[in-house]
Length: 205
Image (tube, rainbow, N blue to C red; front, side, top):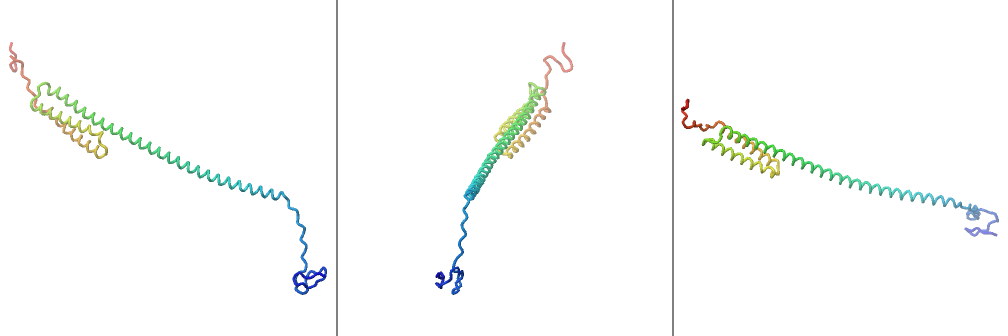
């Protein structure tokens, strides 16, 4: 006679519960396992493979995006440096051009004063200057030479303040030079002696 597997009490054939301990005497037979379809494993593997490839592609794409962003940032920095260098070069050229124009203007003005002085010497003083005229001519020539020396220091000026100081000195010197030339035009002129044998107001036969 079969016995209860839990307490060892005898049980009848076909009895499901032990009357002594109340435990189930026999277990239900397991249902026959259904055969597993291999396509399930294949499909699962394919899904996992696709997911892995997707992750790899995503990671690779993210890395490429980062690399592209870094490359673009580097290119922008290079372009910005080139733009700054070009602007600095253009500013330098512009300043040099402005300086050259300033220097040309100053030299042109000094040349005009030189021409004016020569014209006065030719038309007013002529070949026989008086003592006063000679003094004024020497003073004007000295002032002109001094102005040319000051103008020659313009290219050496490295700051705006230095250039302004030089231009101010030149302006003051030009005023003095113009005044000296004006004094020269008003200075007493040398007398023109009549030819020998000529009497003022009449001529000898």
